[in-house]
Image (cartoon, rainbow, N blue to C red; front, side, top):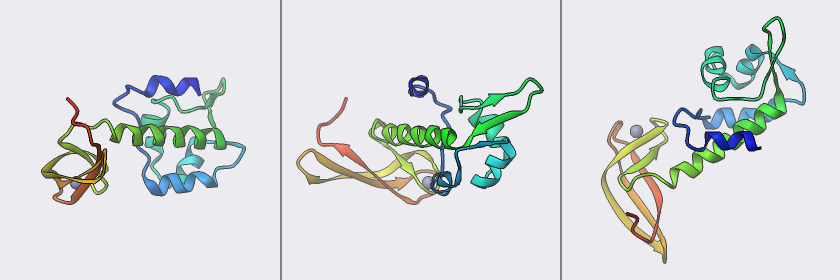
Length: 144
Ligand SMILES: [Zn+2]
């Protein structure tokens, strides 16, 4: 698990979309070729090479260059990254939010705060990129 720590400040940390997270449960306790992982997760093979391997996903490289990815290890790694990404959503700037349509951090327009409970504030706004509604939780304390 220590190997994940180095991603905490990575800006190019992979993002796993919800359908991929759900598909992680298909991966078994066996080794897969990158193309097989791509097929199981319904993603492009280039995502594995350019993003996941680049970001340090657990894998084994044979002498001949063949790469093997262990299914359940990969799934655990992906879920951990996903959790880190969620944490990141809570350290957004005051005028930022996660837009599910853009699948990215976006600037929020027309932001307004509504207190749900003591110390629990919801910020509602509009995505500056696609115009969709976005919201996020904010701490009741005003951050600097
Ligand atoms: Zn958007």
